[in-house]
Image (cartoon, rainbow, N blue to C red; front, side, top):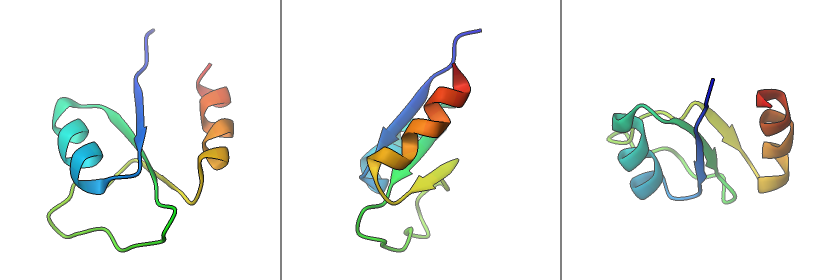
Length: 60
């Protein structure tokens, strides 16, 4: 099965753009900011890109 994981740091372009398409979203929230109420909740939240590696390895 093919899987798509979109990761990004902008809640407005990455989550608002990706969630309506049905993508699994990993938000890299480096600055520990609050999610805006108008933004769809991401599937995963990480504080840095390195923290994403175990998730990707688990999807393989």
